[in-house]
Length: 104
Image (cartoon, rainbow, N blue to C red):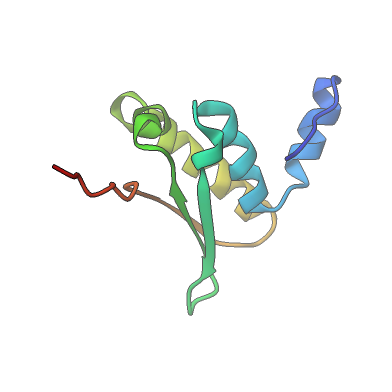
């Protein structure tokens, strides 16, 4: 986990130096109620784009998506800006949590 310093300018500098996956991990774990359930898979497609697949606890899906999709759009925008600065392409996919089979 990333430990940020108290100086906001230095903290911004620290975050801007993180790899895409680590940046997303930091932001998501600050948003959700169950950070231990956050799973991020990183893959590269044949064109060289980075694909980040995010899975969170079912109870946290609404927090990650936000009203009208505002939060997930903002996350995609932040990642896109970071990727452009490092000459990369990135795609963020949010997957449904795997539900436990009901018994009874």
